[in-house]
Image (cartoon, each protein chain N blue to C red):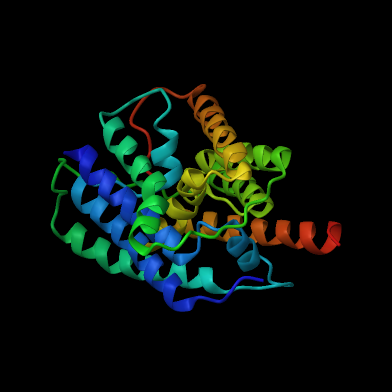
Length: 147
Length: 142
């Protein structure tokens, strides 16, 4: 059941990425290219998503608990530590080089472009490396839910 | 050049937001793609593997569904520079997981929850990405 619900939600998310244009790296790179062929569309993607999630989350949290599990697992960390600065800086560099962030890259996979097929396997390798390094020296426990 | 598409982008964005809200309502989890995809890899610390697999399979099948419904091929321009894309993939995967989130986890879910960490993270990855495109297109590039 959880598998099917998530399949549907992943599909909704992915269709949103395709419809919005965010799964096209050219559109992302043009959004980031303020000094050149700037395409502000992606501000509307972020805006639409954040407005819906802002009000939607409030309604959901007001219910007190999720439908299929015991409790909400949202990140509780508030400290601005080194990782939350260094990680996004590294991620932003790769995003600017390629026009891909993880969601659009996975969504573009089935279109089979050479660049996408080169990107996704190494993306998983990078994710594995970060999880491995992050796990060193810290006691195993519940992970922060953010992502 | 790419066409400015405010309406389609707003609608697509709203679908992304709705997916995030429904995932929170159903399983109480953040719809962050780097978190979901990264936790398909070991170690496994909770029982949500099948949920995550379902979400990723849904993402991957989205273009096929859009094509089947609309009948229009999905146009994309992806760099075919294999070394560049492979390096970028490694950098994106590492940075997104190291920073506990990417465009979806910090940029959509975190901002919607008014998380201070996510505001910082989003400002940094947007700023660095903009600077990277500036350098590759206007300083190094033609």
